[in-house]
Image 1 (spheres, helix red, strand yellow):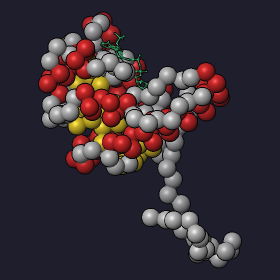
Image 2 (cartoon, rainbow, N blue to C red):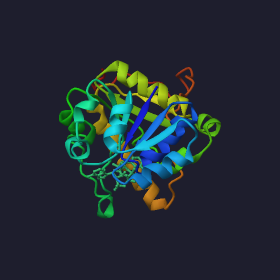
Image 3 (cartoon, rainbow, N blue to C red):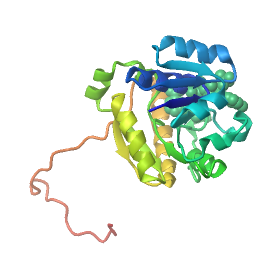
Length: 227
Ligand SMILES: NC(=O)c1ccc[n+]([C@@H]2O[C@H](COP(=O)([O-])OP(=O)(O)OC[C@H]3O[C@@H](n4cnc5c(N)ncnc54)[C@H](OP(=O)(O)O)[C@@H]3O)[C@@H](O)[C@H]2O)c1
């Protein structure tokens, strides 16, 4: 599957290179061609570079890296994204004293409203770029969750498959509005990482084997509403 990277920043570079390792043709786009070229040179024969518009046109799946920048400002023809899966991992800036505001509308939803005919999928928000440096087999063993949200099930499945192929454990969170929770989860993980001055940690969503209730009384009737 052809991958286009719009904005070869840190996340675009590491994601693109990880996918290229799995054999996907990857086109690194940038407004500064040197950055795109450097990323492509770190890859193998299946990596290419050029401007952002070329990357948008090349990709069947496009990773959109610029944060809070309307695609119409980045691309000469944003219609190139129509019908495509557009992956974004945008989080906000880290505020003073980690006083994060609640995420009322996610950045992924805002991006979707800017490119309504694309299929925006939020993913990789909670995974620092450093973690991508691990070899694929190590990542598989580490069971690192990649939370995924998007309004189209097929687009989510495509991103889940790509995330799994590079070693992450995809967690389908459903509709794009769940990106609000994903971005909040990213705020939580960044708060912890910044405080620890350590980018080498991430979420795992661990399946716990069930045990017969009884030892501690089990889950008893409750007045709380459950769905
Ligand atoms: N880094 C991480 O570990 C990490 C992890 C999870 C999520 N995230 C989130 O992912 C997003 C990207 O992070 P990042 O670390 O990759 O940032 P970054 O290294 O600063 O990359 C941002 C990219 O966007 C491009 N860009 C910015 N404004 C642009 C414009 N007006 N026109 C064209 N291109 C523009 C930049 O191009 P130039 O290089 O030319 O400026 C750069 O390629 C952020 O929202 C961040 O919160 C990051």
